[in-house]
Picture (tube, rainbow, N blue to C red):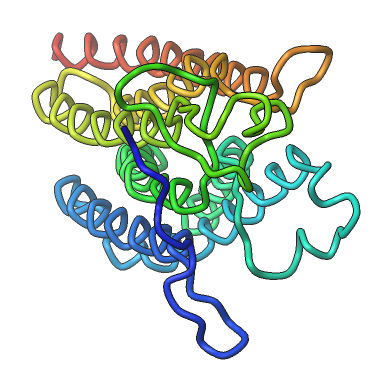
Length: 274
């Protein structure tokens, strides 16, 4: 059983509270940076571009993730809209961050005149690295949990952090919930280990960019599988918005991968005939 975490605030530095949520996102970014440096060197890409690119893409992803979260949890912010803009920040929506981060990546690569596909292979798995670490910030905030469960790894959530339909009055203080943050973290760690290793094994036999596209598809499938366990989904027409967004991301990713495979294959055939 996953216990109730310690206080989400590590220390108060005057008016500023240092929170586990922010610290773990910072650690996730640092480890993702080291991962990208290794992968960029392996592909003989310009490592010096990573830090500037990360700053731009991270800002874009944070803005998109925050906007998605605020819309998703508008019932929490509607009475005090300024709470969505000023610290402390206690929520980011990954689908929003992926969309705005991808747009920023495309703009940066075009502006810097970089061939995109090698960088897609670098950045895609790094997203999974980031998720594997940063999702533990949700545990400290007692958020990103799902339906009640009797499974041995069920998550304890105190009464103050329960949703309106999972209150202690309704379910009792001993209720346990699916730890969705843990599922996403484990999926991210597994994908970050498997996909780069697969890319090395298939080197020369798959088109550049396919591993990065596989990482995006990996995360999209993870979210789609977990969406049925979520509580208080933001819905459009009765369908969870994350299902629509991540389903669209998966579809586009598969179409791009199919296009890449189709365009690279004829080029490989022409080279083999020479």
